Image (cartoon, rainbow over all chains, first blue to last red; front, side, top):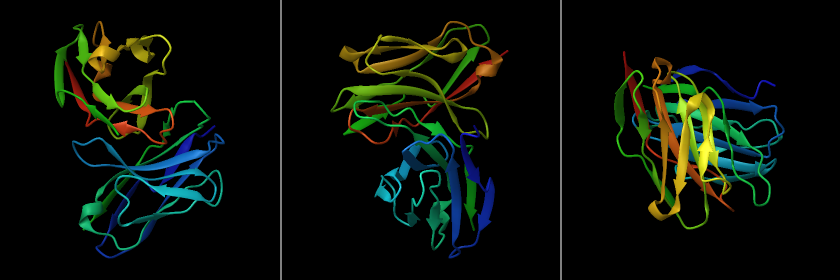
Length: 115
Length: 113
């Protein structure tokens, strides 16, 4: 199993450009998540998905969009990049069942700089 | 609502010394608690988890943590630090019915030779 994979590893964007951060998992997990990590801070939840076709906002969704057309993939879209979106982005997945716990598996991250 | 407080953004210990990283949580539902470790330029890796079984939880690399409900704490310890333990450590909380983790701000552990 490759686990959770993310592409690209690094990216520099100009203000106003758009891009999609890719995330895929091969563990057949139903839940997937996008977090951002700013220096000296913990991870903040951007969006999450509980299954194909179902997504919902987290703590910091403004400026981002997501879609979940398959169980495996959960791309994150930035439409109009702003310097405030400079961060490290982590995708994670978990298998959640009723009464269960959310042990999440993380990808290696995408380091994004907006200039 | 859930939250996590990690006391001390930086902790420095000597090699062979006790490691103690503090985590306090608040949760309106019975919590599930986690410690993750992040090595430089890598993603997060699960160290250990508490899911309402034994209150003393053993994890990988010799780490353990004790759930104390009365103190709302889940501190991480290791009897003897190794140089390879230098990393950032995150405490996180989830709960029955919750769909995501709430993370603390992290503690960077330095190990001095």
